[in-house]
Image (tube, rainbow, N blue to C red; front, side, top):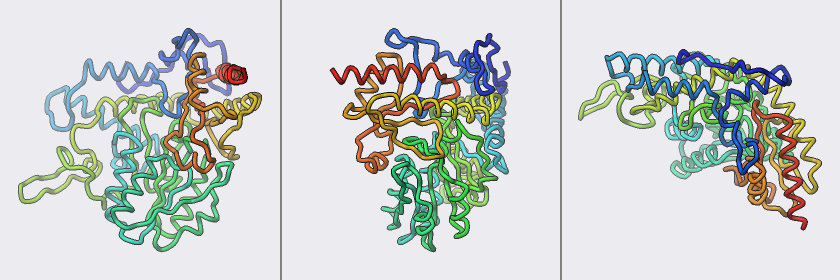
Length: 424
Protein backbone atom coordinates (compact mmCIF):
# COMPACT_ATOMS: atom_id res chain seq x y z
CA UNK A 1 0.00 0.00 0.00
CA UNK A 2 1.30 3.43 -0.93
CA UNK A 3 2.25 5.71 1.93
CA UNK A 4 -0.48 8.11 0.81
CA UNK A 5 -3.24 5.72 -0.18
CA UNK A 6 -6.19 5.74 2.20
CA UNK A 7 -7.94 2.40 2.59
CA UNK A 8 -11.55 1.70 3.41
CA UNK A 9 -12.30 -1.90 4.26
CA UNK A 10 -14.23 -4.03 1.77
CA UNK A 11 -15.49 -6.35 4.50
CA UNK A 12 -19.06 -7.62 3.98
CA UNK A 13 -21.72 -5.12 5.03
CA UNK A 14 -24.77 -5.81 7.16
CA UNK A 15 -26.02 -2.25 7.46
CA UNK A 16 -26.12 1.01 5.53
CA UNK A 17 -27.24 4.27 7.19
CA UNK A 18 -27.40 7.74 5.70
CA UNK A 19 -25.31 6.74 2.70
CA UNK A 20 -22.46 5.38 4.86
CA UNK A 21 -21.73 1.70 5.22
CA UNK A 22 -21.19 1.88 8.97
CA UNK A 23 -20.47 -1.77 9.64
CA UNK A 24 -17.85 -1.83 6.92
CA UNK A 25 -16.30 1.39 8.21
CA UNK A 26 -16.14 -0.07 11.71
CA UNK A 27 -13.98 -2.87 10.37
CA UNK A 28 -11.32 -0.26 9.63
CA UNK A 29 -10.89 0.57 13.35
CA UNK A 30 -9.18 -2.28 15.25
CA UNK A 31 -9.65 -0.66 18.67
CA UNK A 32 -13.43 -0.84 18.38
CA UNK A 33 -13.40 -4.63 18.37
CA UNK A 34 -12.50 -5.36 21.96
CA UNK A 35 -14.22 -5.92 25.26
CA UNK A 36 -13.96 -3.66 28.30
CA UNK A 37 -14.93 -5.20 31.62
CA UNK A 38 -16.37 -8.15 29.70
CA UNK A 39 -18.64 -5.97 27.54
CA UNK A 40 -18.20 -4.89 23.90
CA UNK A 41 -16.57 -1.48 23.78
CA UNK A 42 -18.88 1.43 23.03
CA UNK A 43 -16.48 4.31 22.40
CA UNK A 44 -18.23 7.66 22.88
CA UNK A 45 -15.26 9.82 23.84
CA UNK A 46 -14.41 11.05 20.36
CA UNK A 47 -14.43 14.71 21.38
CA UNK A 48 -11.39 14.00 23.55
CA UNK A 49 -9.63 11.82 20.98
CA UNK A 50 -10.76 9.58 18.13
CA UNK A 51 -9.71 6.02 17.36
CA UNK A 52 -7.36 5.33 14.44
CA UNK A 53 -8.22 3.52 11.19
CA UNK A 54 -5.99 0.74 9.92
CA UNK A 55 -4.93 3.02 7.06
CA UNK A 56 -3.22 5.38 9.52
CA UNK A 57 -1.64 2.54 11.48
CA UNK A 58 -0.31 1.00 8.27
CA UNK A 59 1.09 4.33 7.13
CA UNK A 60 2.96 4.83 10.39
CA UNK A 61 4.40 1.32 10.37
CA UNK A 62 5.41 1.62 6.71
CA UNK A 63 7.17 4.92 7.36
CA UNK A 64 9.10 3.68 10.37
CA UNK A 65 10.02 0.39 8.69
CA UNK A 66 11.04 1.71 5.29
CA UNK A 67 11.41 5.49 5.01
CA UNK A 68 12.39 6.83 8.41
CA UNK A 69 15.11 9.50 8.44
CA UNK A 70 15.37 13.14 9.38
CA UNK A 71 14.13 15.57 6.78
CA UNK A 72 15.33 18.59 4.76
CA UNK A 73 19.02 18.28 5.57
CA UNK A 74 19.91 14.87 4.19
CA UNK A 75 21.07 13.90 0.71
CA UNK A 76 20.67 10.15 1.13
CA UNK A 77 17.68 8.25 -0.22
CA UNK A 78 15.80 7.72 3.05
CA UNK A 79 16.03 11.39 3.98
CA UNK A 80 14.83 12.38 0.52
CA UNK A 81 11.88 9.97 0.71
CA UNK A 82 10.93 11.18 4.19
CA UNK A 83 11.19 14.81 3.06
CA UNK A 84 8.98 14.18 0.04
CA UNK A 85 6.34 12.49 2.21
CA UNK A 86 6.46 15.26 4.81
CA UNK A 87 6.05 18.05 2.27
CA UNK A 88 3.41 16.11 0.35
CA UNK A 89 1.44 16.03 3.59
CA UNK A 90 1.44 19.83 3.61
CA UNK A 91 -0.28 19.72 0.26
CA UNK A 92 -2.86 17.26 1.60
CA UNK A 93 -3.69 19.65 4.45
CA UNK A 94 -3.78 22.64 2.11
CA UNK A 95 -6.38 20.93 -0.06
CA UNK A 96 -8.30 19.70 2.99
CA UNK A 97 -8.75 23.27 4.23
CA UNK A 98 -8.78 24.82 0.74
CA UNK A 99 -5.97 27.13 1.74
CA UNK A 100 -4.65 29.32 -1.06
CA UNK A 101 -1.03 28.21 -0.70
CA UNK A 102 0.89 25.31 0.87
CA UNK A 103 3.10 27.77 2.75
CA UNK A 104 0.03 28.86 4.76
CA UNK A 105 0.08 25.46 6.52
CA UNK A 106 2.20 25.30 9.69
CA UNK A 107 2.70 21.97 11.47
CA UNK A 108 2.48 22.22 15.27
CA UNK A 109 1.78 19.82 18.15
CA UNK A 110 -1.95 20.53 18.19
CA UNK A 111 -4.60 23.21 18.50
CA UNK A 112 -3.14 24.39 21.81
CA UNK A 113 0.29 25.09 20.36
CA UNK A 114 -1.27 26.72 17.29
CA UNK A 115 -3.13 29.23 19.45
CA UNK A 116 -0.07 29.84 21.62
CA UNK A 117 1.96 30.44 18.46
CA UNK A 118 -0.44 33.16 17.29
CA UNK A 119 -0.52 34.71 20.76
CA UNK A 120 3.27 34.76 21.05
CA UNK A 121 3.93 36.09 17.55
CA UNK A 122 1.01 37.99 16.08
CA UNK A 123 -0.24 38.99 19.52
CA UNK A 124 3.00 40.37 20.91
CA UNK A 125 3.71 42.18 17.65
CA UNK A 126 0.34 43.82 17.16
CA UNK A 127 -1.09 44.43 20.66
CA UNK A 128 -0.18 46.96 23.30
CA UNK A 129 -1.57 48.28 26.57
CA UNK A 130 -5.27 49.08 26.37
CA UNK A 131 -5.91 46.91 23.31
CA UNK A 132 -8.57 44.21 23.45
CA UNK A 133 -9.01 40.58 22.44
CA UNK A 134 -12.53 39.18 22.05
CA UNK A 135 -13.29 35.54 22.84
CA UNK A 136 -16.56 33.77 23.71
CA UNK A 137 -18.06 32.40 26.91
CA UNK A 138 -17.82 28.81 25.64
CA UNK A 139 -14.10 28.60 24.91
CA UNK A 140 -11.81 25.70 25.72
CA UNK A 141 -9.01 26.67 28.10
CA UNK A 142 -6.61 26.55 25.15
CA UNK A 143 -8.43 29.54 23.67
CA UNK A 144 -8.58 31.43 26.97
CA UNK A 145 -5.32 31.03 28.87
CA UNK A 146 -2.87 32.07 26.10
CA UNK A 147 -4.81 35.31 25.63
CA UNK A 148 -4.96 35.92 29.38
CA UNK A 149 -1.20 35.47 29.58
CA UNK A 150 -0.71 37.86 26.67
CA UNK A 151 -3.01 40.45 28.24
CA UNK A 152 -1.16 40.24 31.54
CA UNK A 153 2.18 40.74 29.77
CA UNK A 154 1.05 43.68 27.63
CA UNK A 155 -1.64 45.34 29.71
CA UNK A 156 -4.30 44.42 27.17
CA UNK A 157 -7.87 43.38 28.02
CA UNK A 158 -9.83 40.22 27.38
CA UNK A 159 -13.48 40.76 26.43
CA UNK A 160 -16.02 37.92 26.42
CA UNK A 161 -19.08 37.39 24.20
CA UNK A 162 -21.89 36.21 26.52
CA UNK A 163 -24.13 33.25 25.80
CA UNK A 164 -27.61 32.20 26.92
CA UNK A 165 -28.60 29.02 28.73
CA UNK A 166 -29.05 27.15 25.45
CA UNK A 167 -25.41 27.77 24.66
CA UNK A 168 -26.07 30.38 21.96
CA UNK A 169 -23.83 33.43 21.62
CA UNK A 170 -25.36 36.89 21.99
CA UNK A 171 -24.47 38.33 18.59
CA UNK A 172 -25.70 41.82 19.44
CA UNK A 173 -23.38 41.86 22.44
CA UNK A 174 -20.59 40.67 20.13
CA UNK A 175 -21.16 43.57 17.76
CA UNK A 176 -21.15 45.98 20.68
CA UNK A 177 -17.77 44.65 21.85
CA UNK A 178 -16.04 45.43 18.56
CA UNK A 179 -14.29 48.79 18.53
CA UNK A 180 -11.06 50.51 17.49
CA UNK A 181 -9.21 48.88 20.41
CA UNK A 182 -10.13 45.33 19.34
CA UNK A 183 -7.07 43.75 17.77
CA UNK A 184 -8.15 40.09 17.50
CA UNK A 185 -11.23 37.87 17.74
CA UNK A 186 -10.61 34.25 18.73
CA UNK A 187 -13.63 31.94 18.90
CA UNK A 188 -14.43 28.26 18.88
CA UNK A 189 -16.06 26.89 15.73
CA UNK A 190 -17.76 23.93 17.44
CA UNK A 191 -17.93 23.87 21.25
CA UNK A 192 -16.40 20.80 22.87
CA UNK A 193 -18.51 21.28 26.02
CA UNK A 194 -21.90 22.12 24.50
CA UNK A 195 -21.83 21.06 20.86
CA UNK A 196 -22.85 24.55 19.73
CA UNK A 197 -21.98 25.27 16.12
CA UNK A 198 -21.22 28.96 16.18
CA UNK A 199 -22.16 31.39 13.36
CA UNK A 200 -18.51 31.88 12.41
CA UNK A 201 -19.30 33.33 8.99
CA UNK A 202 -21.17 36.21 10.65
CA UNK A 203 -18.53 36.54 13.38
CA UNK A 204 -15.79 36.89 10.75
CA UNK A 205 -17.77 39.31 8.56
CA UNK A 206 -18.52 41.63 11.48
CA UNK A 207 -14.89 41.57 12.65
CA UNK A 208 -13.56 42.28 9.17
CA UNK A 209 -15.80 45.34 8.91
CA UNK A 210 -13.49 46.75 11.60
CA UNK A 211 -10.32 45.25 10.00
CA UNK A 212 -10.01 42.82 12.93
CA UNK A 213 -8.46 39.40 12.20
CA UNK A 214 -10.22 36.26 13.38
CA UNK A 215 -8.81 32.98 14.68
CA UNK A 216 -11.05 29.91 14.70
CA UNK A 217 -10.49 27.00 17.09
CA UNK A 218 -11.38 24.12 14.79
CA UNK A 219 -10.37 21.23 17.04
CA UNK A 220 -13.92 19.84 17.10
CA UNK A 221 -15.16 21.08 13.73
CA UNK A 222 -12.41 19.72 11.47
CA UNK A 223 -13.40 16.05 12.06
CA UNK A 224 -17.10 16.75 11.39
CA UNK A 225 -17.47 19.57 8.87
CA UNK A 226 -16.07 20.49 5.49
CA UNK A 227 -13.92 23.52 6.31
CA UNK A 228 -13.07 25.99 3.54
CA UNK A 229 -10.83 28.69 4.99
CA UNK A 230 -11.05 30.81 1.84
CA UNK A 231 -14.86 30.76 1.86
CA UNK A 232 -14.91 31.50 5.59
CA UNK A 233 -12.22 34.15 5.09
CA UNK A 234 -10.84 33.42 8.56
CA UNK A 235 -7.34 34.70 9.21
CA UNK A 236 -6.19 31.75 11.33
CA UNK A 237 -7.61 28.25 11.76
CA UNK A 238 -6.26 25.61 14.15
CA UNK A 239 -6.98 21.90 14.53
CA UNK A 240 -5.50 18.75 16.07
CA UNK A 241 -4.64 15.50 14.34
CA UNK A 242 -5.67 13.13 17.11
CA UNK A 243 -9.33 14.21 16.99
CA UNK A 244 -9.26 13.71 13.22
CA UNK A 245 -8.34 9.99 13.46
CA UNK A 246 -4.62 10.77 13.17
CA UNK A 247 -1.68 10.53 15.59
CA UNK A 248 -1.30 12.48 18.80
CA UNK A 249 1.22 15.28 19.05
CA UNK A 250 0.49 16.76 15.63
CA UNK A 251 -1.74 19.62 14.55
CA UNK A 252 -2.06 22.44 12.07
CA UNK A 253 -2.13 26.20 12.13
CA UNK A 254 -3.47 27.77 8.96
CA UNK A 255 -2.74 31.45 8.57
CA UNK A 256 -3.11 33.87 5.70
CA UNK A 257 0.30 34.27 4.10
CA UNK A 258 0.26 38.07 4.41
CA UNK A 259 -0.14 37.75 8.19
CA UNK A 260 2.32 34.89 8.66
CA UNK A 261 5.00 36.75 6.72
CA UNK A 262 4.79 39.64 9.19
CA UNK A 263 5.01 37.43 12.28
CA UNK A 264 8.35 36.81 14.02
CA UNK A 265 9.57 33.26 14.75
CA UNK A 266 7.89 31.35 17.55
CA UNK A 267 10.94 29.25 18.50
CA UNK A 268 14.59 29.36 17.56
CA UNK A 269 16.66 26.42 16.36
CA UNK A 270 17.41 24.35 13.33
CA UNK A 271 15.55 24.58 10.04
CA UNK A 272 13.87 27.92 10.82
CA UNK A 273 16.93 29.93 9.85
CA UNK A 274 18.38 31.36 6.67
CA UNK A 275 21.84 32.19 8.03
CA UNK A 276 23.34 32.15 11.51
CA UNK A 277 26.38 34.02 12.74
CA UNK A 278 27.31 35.02 16.27
CA UNK A 279 26.52 38.58 15.32
CA UNK A 280 23.15 38.09 13.62
CA UNK A 281 20.64 35.46 12.49
CA UNK A 282 18.29 35.81 9.55
CA UNK A 283 15.16 33.69 9.44
CA UNK A 284 13.68 31.38 6.86
CA UNK A 285 10.53 32.20 4.96
CA UNK A 286 7.19 30.64 5.89
CA UNK A 287 6.35 27.90 6.73
CA UNK A 288 9.88 26.88 7.83
CA UNK A 289 10.16 29.96 10.05
CA UNK A 290 7.62 28.42 12.43
CA UNK A 291 8.85 24.81 12.38
CA UNK A 292 12.04 24.88 14.43
CA UNK A 293 13.91 21.64 15.08
CA UNK A 294 13.12 18.10 14.03
CA UNK A 295 9.34 17.94 13.59
CA UNK A 296 6.95 15.08 14.31
CA UNK A 297 7.63 13.61 10.88
CA UNK A 298 5.64 10.42 11.35
CA UNK A 299 2.79 12.41 12.88
CA UNK A 300 2.59 14.69 9.85
CA UNK A 301 2.56 11.74 7.47
CA UNK A 302 0.01 9.92 9.62
CA UNK A 303 -2.19 13.03 9.69
CA UNK A 304 -2.16 13.15 5.90
CA UNK A 305 -3.27 9.51 5.81
CA UNK A 306 -6.09 10.27 8.26
CA UNK A 307 -7.26 13.22 6.17
CA UNK A 308 -7.29 11.11 3.02
CA UNK A 309 -9.26 8.45 4.86
CA UNK A 310 -12.03 10.82 5.96
CA UNK A 311 -12.06 12.50 2.55
CA UNK A 312 -12.60 9.14 0.93
CA UNK A 313 -15.67 8.67 3.14
CA UNK A 314 -16.71 12.30 2.62
CA UNK A 315 -17.03 15.12 5.17
CA UNK A 316 -20.54 15.98 4.04
CA UNK A 317 -21.66 12.38 4.49
CA UNK A 318 -19.92 12.22 7.87
CA UNK A 319 -21.67 15.37 9.06
CA UNK A 320 -25.07 14.22 7.81
CA UNK A 321 -24.74 10.83 9.49
CA UNK A 322 -23.47 12.12 12.83
CA UNK A 323 -26.35 14.63 12.84
CA UNK A 324 -28.82 11.74 12.62
CA UNK A 325 -27.00 10.11 15.55
CA UNK A 326 -27.14 13.37 17.50
CA UNK A 327 -30.88 13.70 16.89
CA UNK A 328 -31.47 10.09 17.90
CA UNK A 329 -29.29 10.40 20.98
CA UNK A 330 -31.02 13.61 22.05
CA UNK A 331 -34.41 11.87 21.87
CA UNK A 332 -33.26 8.71 23.66
CA UNK A 333 -31.50 10.55 26.51
CA UNK A 334 -34.78 12.22 27.41
CA UNK A 335 -36.03 8.77 28.44
CA UNK A 336 -33.53 8.67 31.32
CA UNK A 337 -35.18 9.85 34.58
CA UNK A 338 -33.74 13.11 35.88
CA UNK A 339 -31.42 13.67 32.92
CA UNK A 340 -30.85 17.22 31.68
CA UNK A 341 -28.98 17.95 28.48
CA UNK A 342 -26.50 20.82 28.81
CA UNK A 343 -26.27 22.68 25.53
CA UNK A 344 -29.47 22.88 23.51
CA UNK A 345 -28.53 25.33 20.76
CA UNK A 346 -30.59 24.93 17.59
CA UNK A 347 -27.36 24.56 15.61
CA UNK A 348 -25.10 21.97 17.19
CA UNK A 349 -23.13 18.86 16.31
CA UNK A 350 -21.56 15.71 17.73
CA UNK A 351 -21.78 16.51 21.48
CA UNK A 352 -24.26 15.24 24.07
CA UNK A 353 -23.39 16.75 27.45
CA UNK A 354 -25.71 16.06 30.38
CA UNK A 355 -26.34 15.86 34.11
CA UNK A 356 -28.50 13.40 36.04
CA UNK A 357 -29.96 15.05 39.16
CA UNK A 358 -27.63 14.49 42.11
CA UNK A 359 -25.41 11.84 40.51
CA UNK A 360 -21.88 13.13 40.03
CA UNK A 361 -20.63 12.81 36.42
CA UNK A 362 -17.57 10.90 37.62
CA UNK A 363 -19.86 8.28 39.16
CA UNK A 364 -21.81 8.11 35.90
CA UNK A 365 -18.60 7.62 33.93
CA UNK A 366 -17.38 4.91 36.31
CA UNK A 367 -20.59 2.89 36.13
CA UNK A 368 -20.78 3.26 32.36
CA UNK A 369 -17.23 1.97 32.07
CA UNK A 370 -18.36 -1.22 33.81
CA UNK A 371 -20.87 -1.57 30.98
CA UNK A 372 -18.16 -1.08 28.36
CA UNK A 373 -19.25 2.47 27.54
CA UNK A 374 -16.52 5.11 27.32
CA UNK A 375 -17.61 8.71 27.87
CA UNK A 376 -15.92 11.81 29.31
CA UNK A 377 -16.77 13.23 32.74
CA UNK A 378 -15.47 16.53 34.09
CA UNK A 379 -15.26 20.17 33.12
CA UNK A 380 -13.86 19.35 29.65
CA UNK A 381 -11.23 22.11 29.93
CA UNK A 382 -14.09 24.61 29.81
CA UNK A 383 -14.52 25.69 33.42
CA UNK A 384 -16.16 29.03 32.53
CA UNK A 385 -18.91 27.05 30.77
CA UNK A 386 -19.45 25.02 33.93
CA UNK A 387 -19.56 28.22 35.95
CA UNK A 388 -22.22 29.62 33.63
CA UNK A 389 -24.47 26.65 34.42
CA UNK A 390 -23.36 26.57 38.08
CA UNK A 391 -22.10 23.01 37.67
CA UNK A 392 -18.80 21.44 38.69
CA UNK A 393 -18.85 19.04 35.74
CA UNK A 394 -20.95 17.24 33.15
CA UNK A 395 -20.96 13.83 31.54
CA UNK A 396 -20.31 13.95 27.80
CA UNK A 397 -20.91 11.48 25.00
CA UNK A 398 -19.26 12.63 21.78
CA UNK A 399 -20.06 11.01 18.47
CA UNK A 400 -18.14 9.78 15.44
CA UNK A 401 -19.19 8.34 12.10
CA UNK A 402 -18.24 4.87 13.35
CA UNK A 403 -20.82 5.00 16.14
CA UNK A 404 -24.28 3.48 15.74
CA UNK A 405 -27.81 3.83 17.04
CA UNK A 406 -27.35 0.51 18.79
CA UNK A 407 -24.47 2.00 20.75
CA UNK A 408 -26.64 4.92 21.79
CA UNK A 409 -29.23 2.38 22.96
CA UNK A 410 -26.52 0.72 25.07
CA UNK A 411 -25.55 4.13 26.49
CA UNK A 412 -29.17 4.85 27.44
CA UNK A 413 -29.60 1.42 29.04
CA UNK A 414 -26.40 1.96 31.06
CA UNK A 415 -27.62 5.38 32.20
CA UNK A 416 -30.95 3.92 33.25
CA UNK A 417 -29.05 1.30 35.23
CA UNK A 418 -27.04 4.09 36.85
CA UNK A 419 -30.23 5.82 37.95
CA UNK A 420 -31.56 2.56 39.43
CA UNK A 421 -28.34 1.99 41.37
CA UNK A 422 -28.46 5.47 42.93
CA UNK A 423 -32.16 5.17 43.74
CA UNK A 424 -31.66 2.10 45.93
